Structures are given as structure tokens and as C-alpha cells.
Amino acid sequence: MTTIAIIGAGKGLGAAVARRFGKEGFAVALLSRHQGRLDALAADLEADGVQARGFAADVRDPDSLARALERATQELGPIEVLQYSPLPQKDFMRPVLETTPADLVGPVEFSIYGPVAAVHAVVPGMRFLGENRGTILFVNGGSAVTPGRNVTGTSIAFAGQAAYAELLHEVLGEEGIAVSQLIIGGQIIEGDDEKDPAVLADHLWELHEKRTEFRRQISAD
View 1 (tube, rainbow, N blue to C red):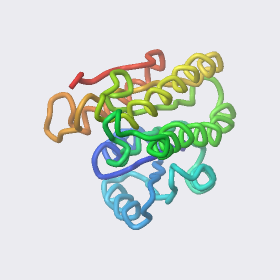
View 2 (cartoon, rainbow, N blue to C red; view 1 turned 135 degrees about the vertical axis):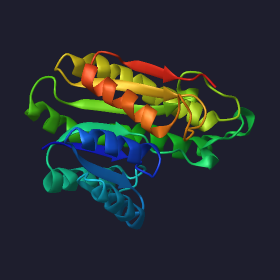
View 3 (cartoon, helix red, strand yellow; view 1 turned 90 degrees about the vertical axis):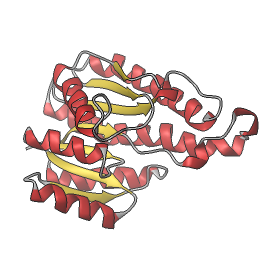
């Protein structure tokens, strides 16, 4: 059995992705800052027949993220799929003329340093699995492709993450490791035809399975 590691796992999209990949036989490593919430989510997933375990980590602390991914590998099995989808903090989203250099530290740590640390932690294991096995999935809001004047921190940091993801897509693709980005415009909405968590989870599964598409955008709002 191999594992999907979901960084930024919560009751919405993270849980839906866990169920979608769990249905396909994946073990699920859930990563976020709060161990208690992770344990509760893992218990819910286990009740639905999904093997899941929580590993507390802070994406703004690269060492804690690397340690959590190493533990996940040891306890659940090789990480075949990495999903990076933590929800940005509200204080990252300031109007452009009110944004100072200090205001960009958090977004850059969150959206650039975190993904780089995670990728470095999992790529060696993906290489070990062999060609056409590993997948790295980035999930971003619409400001990753269309910057917003009132969400400056995420606009700048998401753009950097998008550039990093595209470079990975080019380089790791040569080794058979797929890298894709799902852009979700606006909020995730339960029951929505386009942006219900389960619908979005199907998109992520399809990106992993087809392995050819770098960027897919759901809604532009």
C-alpha cells in the first residue's frame, strides 16, 4: 500500500480527497498544525473504511514538515502522492498599498518555503517507487493566476508557488513524476456543482491518474 500525504488537511477538501484516494486503496497521512483535529478527522475516515493517521506540522517550519512526512512514510508506507493545500491565513490578505515587507514574510514561508521543504522530503521516495508513480498536487486560489489588489500577500506568494510548481512539472516530468496544479476560484462550496469538495477531489484524482495536465482551473470568480 502507498500513501497520499495531504498538507493542510481539514474537514472540507482534505477529507474529500482522503475519501477519494482511500477508495482507491491509498493510506492517508493528514498534516496540519493541530494534532487533536487531525486525530478526530482520522477517526471519521477510519469509520468509513479509510486507513488514515494525523501528523502535526507547521508549514512555516520546514523542519517540522520534513519530520512529519518522514513519520508518515515510516508508519503508513511510501508517499506516492503529495497534496499541498493549506488554507492561507487572513492576515496574508492586505491591500497592496498597505502591504509592507514584513507582511510578506508569512505568505512566502507558507506558500514557497513550505512546498519546497515538502517536495524535497518526498521526491526521493517517489523515485524509489519507479516511473509513472509519484504525483505532486498543488491547490491554489484564483489569485495564483490573477492577482488581486486586496489579497497582496497570497497573490505574490501563490504566484511564486505556481512558478515553482511549473518548474517541477517540467523537470520531474522527465523522470515520470507528475506535477499538477488545481486552481479554485472563490470559495469551496458544499453542494455546488463545480466547487463541492467531493467534485474537487474527483478533479485531483483525475490529475493524478492521467498525469499529463499541469494546470486545471475551476471557476474564475
